[in-house]
Image (tube, rainbow, N blue to C red; front, top):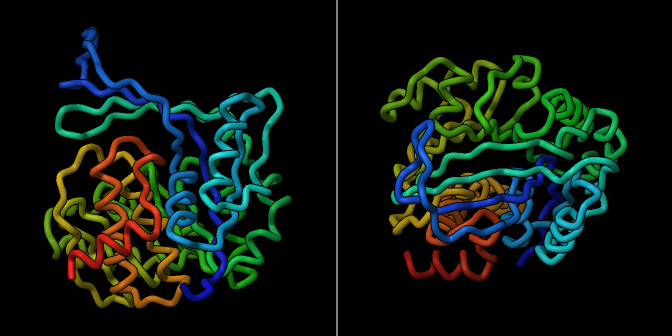
Length: 309
């Protein structure tokens, strides 16, 4: 495998408590679940793991609590080929937690306690500025404080590090932040919050992409679930279909896509091939339960792509 560029990921780390249910409970209702598990998650960590297992040269800027689970997560990230030097244990904080229900259709409903993730302040970002400066690309999401995402984007922008933003969970964002972003990867809901365009088809996706280009973003990838991705570069758009698989749960599908996409691009793959590689990694992830346990290794993604040819 040829030597790739360096990736920095800035984001969240959570312990995911996952419970499978036939149907989601209504208010006031108690339902009996099955298959309870604790898995490591958080959008930042999931994307870092997807990049690490895909073969990226990656450093991760994040915070865990000074607790046993935080220690175990750091250890696991090292096994996933991630430089965790910038992952800090914060005194007096617990590691972030996500409570996740998965229904019979494989859909999920999630509630999050930020815990140590809230301690990833602009001052902490500043402390790890060299990690951002040394990287070719900086990948971020929105489970970290917004002012920290902005601070990191400014450092990256000043030092020619490409800024890639996965604007999840859905949140309105300032034009100041969007102007610093070179590539954005929203899903349909997130794209609608950022642009006001409701996406039902490719024409809608093209309109939403145009609105994001107008904010200064050169590459827009709107993920459309089972319909694939709407890819728009400098205003030229097309849909790239995903792969048909039997989904078990979709918990880390978007995160796997983002981490694998960045790995492929930093290796010099064309955008088209990078998206196909990311689709393949995400397709494998949805056939397995949990967030990080579902993320494939490079050999698995390459093998999946061989079978499709």
